[in-house]
Image (spheres, rainbow, N blue to C red):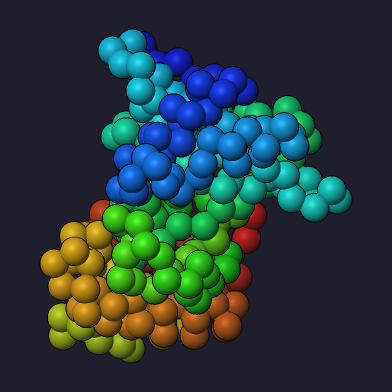
Length: 261
């Protein structure tokens, strides 16, 4: 992208700017960032990576990410956090990918809130990662400005770093809409559908769960529990999350390759 600079950050001032950026994204006071600069410095010193994206028109980072390595024999990197201004997320993830590949990693994992449909679409469709694990209330109760008042379920995705990134769609919506409904959402419409061949499950999420949490937190929590039920049942039966449609429906597939699809 023209005017975008991505670099690994090692200096104290640069790491402090990244910590401030994360505070702004997660709506916490800059005196209490979700990832303090001293923690970021320690992670870099231990061999991890902090990347920051800057555009020509600003000193403040426009995106940032933090990654570390997993167990020595796993050849896997783990992304602790990544965030970016609109349109810059793909470049930030590609910087992480290049860093990890240069150091011998083959896959990268991270977690995200499965109710945030735009993040699901970015991870599963644009990057081509696969949702491989559903974690119930992973962090416990959180007190930032984005997750406050909700339970912190997370979906782990696994990204095959060696496979070229090939965006993929979720398939024919007609097949989904023709499948029998198995669960109802808090709004009374179908929440989940399952095909008769028992190969696909589709699950819907709310249009904007962050806004819903702020305006109707109890309703947002009902959505959390409803989606959790669908995902935990499906994952226990061997399904993984392989897609997200533009209208907010996950595709869960039985027998899909868990390292990328």
